Structures are given as C-alpha cells and as structure tokens.
Length: 445
Image (tube, rainbow, N blue to C red; front, side, top):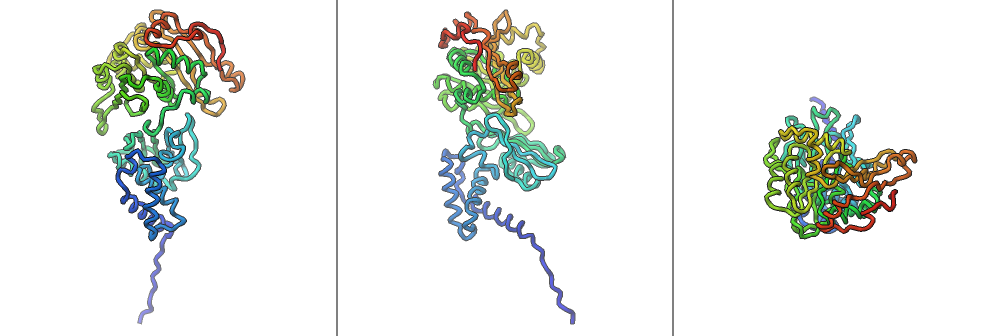
C-alpha cells in the first residue's frame, strides 16, 4: 500500500482578490445605462446612479469597499478607467491634460496639466507597466485603434473628443506611456479676467485686445511654444465675440470649442489609419465657401498655410490662428518653411508682404521658468504695418524681470496702435479709448 501524497496548491490571494474585484466591477458596469456619460448629467447624479447599482449588489461588495468600487465602476463606464478623476468630478474641469510616463522601476508615473503647469498626481494609478499597457489597450480598443506590437504608436480620439497619444513596445524601452489632451467640451474657456489675475498679461492688454482686436474684427496671429497658452488666450478672447456672428473653426484636432457662440461650425481633419481623408487645406476651402463673419484656423503647421492665407485675405470679419513662433524673426522663418511644404517657394523679401496680408496684429506668448512656476506670459503685442514693417505696442520687460530675480513682472507700453489702424478698427466696431491713442503710462503691471 502506497502512502497518500498530499498536493498543495499555492495561490496568490492578493492577485486572486484583485481579479475577482475587477470581475465584479466589469459585471456591474455592464449593467449601467449605455448613455450614462454620453448625456449631460452632472457628476453628482452620475455618481449616485453608480452608487445605487453597487449597493444593490451587497452580495458582491463589502461595505468598506463601496467607495472604491463606485470610483472604479465610474471609470469603467466613462471609458477613463483609473484616470477618471481627471475628467469628471469637482476640480476636473481645470485639468487640461494627463500624462503617463514609464519609469526605470517599472511603476508608471502620472502627471496632470493645470493652469499651464505640470503637476505630479501624487498617488499610484498603475502598479506596473503591464497594468498601464492593459489600460491603454482598452481605451485604444474603445477608440477603434489597436495598440499592439505591430502598431506601437497610436493617435486616436476618445468618445468625448479628447486626443489620445500612446506609445509602447520596442518604441519605448522602459514601458508604455502616453498623454490624453482633454477635449474642450470638458474644459470651459478661461475668462480673460482669470488670465489677468494669474499674471499672464496686464489688465491694459486684456482691455486693448477686447476693445480693439475683438470688437474691431482684427486679423490675429497668436504664437508661442507648446503650452504657452495660445489656445487658452484665443478661447478667452472668443468669449467677447457676438453670439450670433457666423463663425467657422477649422483644426487638425478638436481644441477650440466656443460654447458662447450660437452660430458656430467646428470642422476637424479626418483620418483613416495613417491616411488623411480630409486635410486642413480642404477645411479652409470649405470655410471660405461658407462666407463666415469670423474665421478661426487652429494651429497652422504646414501646407495649410496657403489656404489659410486666402481666408485671411478674403474674410470680412476677422481671421484668427495660432502657431509656433517666439517672435517676428522666428515667425518669418516658420512661414517660409510652411509655404515650401505647400510647394510654394516664397522669396524672403515677399514674406513681410504676405504676413501683412494675413495679420493686423501678432501676439507672442512664452512660459517663464526662472521662478520655478512655469507661468504663461504675454511677451509682446505687435502691429503689422503694411509697407513699413512691425510696430511693437506692448512687450514684457524681460530685463527688469531678470535683474529682480523674477520678482518684478511688468510690461512696457512702447507705442500706441497707429492712427490709420485705429480708424479702420473703429469703422469695424472697435471701442477706441483715449489710452489707446497715446502712451500715458509706460510701465504696466
């Protein structure tokens, strides 16, 4: 007779518990209404619907786990998963983007953008690179774009209009990572007053832009490096556009949502895989055929410059766009390259004439880091004077800022807007005040 041999099964109970919890969360999430997050319900109402569903399954969820499960299910139902607190709920509307970075220790780090600055999220959202990979594969699948070894870089749209960009596999040796730039539908425009309060620009500049540029239907170019506040300022100024003006917006990605306008059309590029089906040039031509009162072209980067220039020359009510340039010199270089990409070799001597045909004013922004705050800053406002060149209206006093170690933030009012331009802006509806006609106070804070 052989002795009985006992077989022992080793079980990772923590891993089993995690998987069981995920199963319960997915089961309850599937039973929720499909339009839970597609509707216009407030966050409190959404949370209450999820909580009722969780409490109804007391056989599966222990009382001390209810809050965690509610948060997890809301993430499953919304499509944002563990990052859902950056998209819905108190304070989420001020978050502009979320970043997931791979790290050498295998635990991804999460950061978020708010008020023009990047902040560490502070707590662990992913316990491993594998967890982050599963997360990205799920949201990519929901967006209809597989994230696999044969497609290691994915750009896609989430259902709320947020822009997703992920990378992994051999492209990223430390593990998968990515960024979600939140849809403007979830981010209301920042009021111009808030930008003044944050120190981005002086009150005088805000009033001048509102009274002259917006009301006077000026052609504007807002330029700066990435995350310097170009779109933020554009949307803030757009709050002063008359609600019934026929406004067209064309962009490569959906960023300029203008909820205050009732007669507005938003157009975006259409892609299928790696192929662009409808590009910016086509959108610009469509915009031009619809005779808008005001035309807004989201960030110009390349060959769409030719179509955008035609809109600027023909629009009756004001052409606005954004782009990457830090000053007039870099703008001239950038535009020359864009025209070359469009198949047009524009001689450098003709650049100024082309810029004058597109813009009445140029606004340049940057992001200072001397004080460690990475504060968005208006660097200059420049009038484009046909046949003469560039006339600086306002500029940030970088010399005094540097000399004071970042303690003094002030702007210099160098020149008033030219009388000829003021007259044309007044003809189009601008509110011309005495302080816009002559320099009374040189230094502005």
